Length: 270
Image 1 (cartoon, rainbow, N blue to C red):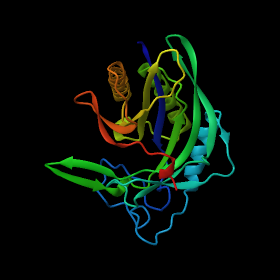
Image 2: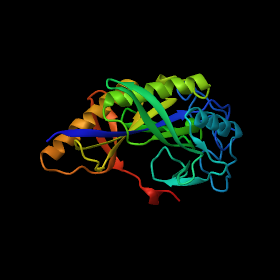
Image 3: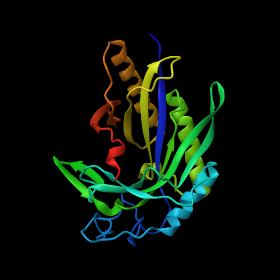
């Protein structure tokens, strides 16, 4: 049986603002700055701390939405995305769900078969998490990045290969830099890709359970992680198995994905 991939991308882009999304803490380079020095009760989730929205972040997000041909909504709502992880001090992430800032855009990409339109489902604002690192058998958390303004751009599952995903990511990266909303320094983690990958029998329109590959920080890792996941799922179905809907990471050293947690659903947003 011949299988085809069904791929959608979520791109998280750090916005070029001087302060964080919901507090006045300065946005700094999380690689060079001393850990846990640009934090406050708001971005570390202390009881009683109240968020205040960053106007500049909204302006930059609207700029992106217009460039992508989206409908800009005059009313949008923030929600709590609930999950537990050490780099999330509040136990939830302030994001948007059912009423995002912008919807229904598109990007044209060039493929081997010609020009293809990738539909943009939504563009919304959210805050970044802290940063985990591991060394000598210990884990460390730096909250300097916690609360940094992020723009999440979500596509429909319109891509059918890792190369199409790369073409889309490359085009979007160039647009964000041109608009002046993101520095484009991928080695600093200011743009991160997450690929939602499933496979199905070629020629059908079934949407099977998907895996979300988190925090792909380069075009190369995006392609490698996506290609590995397509192959893994195809082999599972060919052997009569089933694919679990889950979140996975990608190990660049081994070229393989690994399970992290179950994929969040609508009930995780409140």
